[in-house]
Image (cartoon, rainbow, N blue to C red; front, side, top):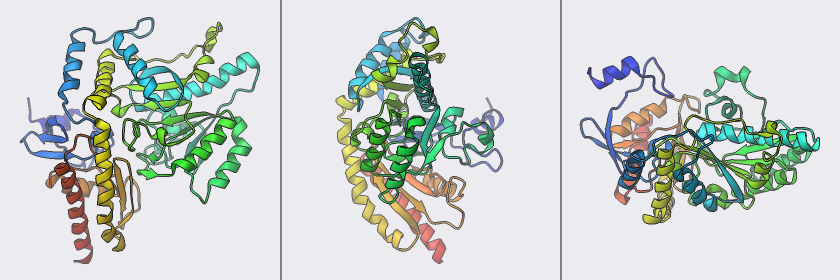
Length: 436
């Protein structure tokens, strides 16, 4: 076969990647723990858990062995009319861990489909109620500005109108957008819900941290006020925990830090320890009961070819087991502690005006780089940071001028310190280039 990079350039279309003036592609040969190795054997620390998924590290032997054994037993079966042990065991294991009174797990393929399922579930909940009780069906959906919920059409519709959605704006659903809550605007947001809430079907939100929208963080107490009022208005509250779930914010789920719980929760990414694609949309009995009826039209007509894939469900079970076997939440605590201790080291660069808004939430640390280009995903400084960090043995992938880390929980103290030192080294280099 021709050289790997030449073949890649001929045949492969990479995601979120310009097709002209392409950024360098790095061939990865293998992974181990927090490290990735290129084809020449050079290691680099995966400081973003390969798009926030690989929570236990790469090539974990326990997960790999479980998948191998399952593949020898049952690799796939249609999930309409059949069931299997991994799917049932995962649902039974997952529901008691979730923050709220959840009843049923609906499996899909990834984060986008998990949110797509949740939106359809919430809208049909009201449609089903209208068929039985004659109440007007609610169809309005509420979401936060600056949000990101995925790349399918429903998920794009409830996401910030941005470079990710620009080509599709005429085709997206109309959605009511509000700002994330602050002490200054909470009164205005409450007034909006008081006035409009009786017509709103669902409120979808990323709890505590907005991910691809720029790693923006907000207070749990203020979110709680909105959720409390939303529940008073009978709005179905959907927590998109695709990124925040499984320890990212310091607790197993971000919604644990909010008193009011969601009616539906969306999961993916860390669900399988980052090993395989799997989505889960978990709903309360209140939501589920609206679909239990002799009227066949109240069926939830939704599914995927690989719904509840046995290999993916097995990987998810193994990942949950690792939280106990390896005391993973203690490792999460260690990263939280390290992030808090590192934050003061960034203050010098804040004072110099080189960075803005350094912030942490659990294992996530982020700040904005000051740049002559506009803020946002297309800011070219992000690619510069990625390339320079790779030369120092660390993989960072800023969201434009938003630099962040989201490391695997198995990262060692030495590896995490290397990530911190790499960021500091790059900031010093940028400072020198501005003043040189």
